[in-house]
Image 1 (cartoon, one colour):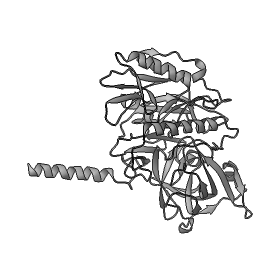
Image 2 (image 1 turned 135 degrees about the horizontal axis):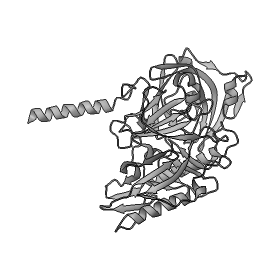
Image 3 (image 1 turned 135 degrees about the vertical axis):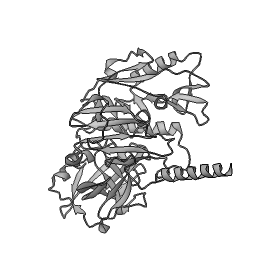
Amino acid sequence: MRIQLLLLLISLLLLNSESLNCNGNNPRGHPSDLRVFHIESPCSPYKQPNTVSWESTLIKDNARLQYLSSLAVGKKPWVPIASGRSILQSPTYIVRANIGTPAQSMLVALDTSNDVTWVPCSGCVGCASSVLFDPSKSSSPRTVQCEAAQCKQAPNPTCTVSRSCGFNMTYGGSTITASLTQDTLTLTDDAIPNYTFGCINKATGTSLPAQGLMGLGRGPLSLISQTQNLYKSTFSYCLPNSKSNSFSGTLRLGPKFQPVRIKTTPLLKNPRRSSLYYVNMVGIRVGNKIVDIPPSALAFNPATGAGTIFDSGTVYTRLVEPAYLAVRNEFRRRVKNANPTSLGGFDTCYSGSVVFPSVTFMFAGMNVTLPPDNLLIHSSSGSTSCLAMAAAPNNVNSVLNVIASMQQQNHRVLIDLPNSRLGISRETCT
C-alpha cells in the first residue's frame, strides 16, 4: 500500500512539474506551435492573488466592447484609439516572445483586434513591469527612420530632430509613447530579422499588459503581415480555459499542421477598420428553434462598424441588445420548472439540477454548437449556473456582436487570409 501511495505521489509531482514548465514551446511537437498561457496560469505574471469576480470581468468587458466599437468606426484603419476608456486590466491570453540577439524573453498579450507589437523598454517612465527589453544588450536593433514605410503605418507617427520615428497611441485608459524599432523576433524555432515593433519610452494609466502586446490583426504592422513570406498570412489558436492545470493552449503559425477537416465561413473586411476579423453571423438557434432576431442586429455595415467579430480579448460573448434579448428569452423559455435569477452581472442563472438547451451560432456556411463548458459559467460552489453571455453596452457606438474567448475555448480557430476564411474545429487544449 505504501509503495502504491509513493508511486501516486511521484506521478503527481511529475505531472505538476510538467504543467509548470513555463519556458518550453512546441507543446504538441509541432515546430510552428507556441504555448498559450491563460492569465491565471502559474506561469503568468498577470495571475491575480484573489479570484476576479464575474461582475468586475463583465464591467471590463463593457469597456472592451466600447473600445472595439471605437476601432470599428475609426477613420484610419491602422489607428487603434479609444481615448479615455478602460480595457481589461490584464490580457486574457499570453505567449512567450524572444526579442533581440541574444534573445530577451517577454510574456506578451495576444490581441487579435490590434496590429502593432509593443513592449516596455529600459528607461521607460511609467511602465509597471520589472521585465523590460533592453536594446543596448542586443546586437541587432535598428532605429526606424521617418522616411521608412513602417513609420507611415504606425499609429499617430511622430518624428524626432534626428529623423527617427516614434508613435503615440491610446490603449484603453492608458497611453504610450514609443520609438519604432526593428530587431530579431524569435517565435518557436523561427528567427524573424528586422521585425518592427514599438519600444515604449513612456506610459500612463493602468490598463497596459505589463510585458507588452503582440498584434494579430491584419494591418501592415501586425505579426501576420510582417511574416507574410514565412507564415503565409495563416495562423490558428486553441485557447485553454481558466480551470486548466496544464495551460496547454497553442498559437500555430503558418499553413502547415493546420486542421484539414474544419468548418469555415468567409472573412469580411471593413475598410474603416480592416484589422478586425468580421464574419457573417446569419442567425442563432436555441434548442431546435432559430430565434427571431431583427436582421439589422446581425447585418454587416462597414459605415457604422456593425456586424460580428471574433476577439481574443473579450471574455464573454456580447450580442447587441435585440439579439441578446431574443436568445435569452428563448433560453429561459426552454428551461422548465425553474425561475431565472441574476448573479455577478449575468441575468439568466439557475440553481440546482437544471436541463439547459443548446445554443448554436449560425454563420454563412458554418454552424457552431456550443458545448456546455462554453455556454455556462458556474458559481464557485457549483450550485448556480448562468448563461455566459450578455448584451453589449447600450450606447450609439456599441454595434458589434463579439464572439469572445470563453466561447472559443477548446476550439481550434483558424485565420486563413489568403483564402479569406475563418474556420472552427473542436479541439481539447485544456
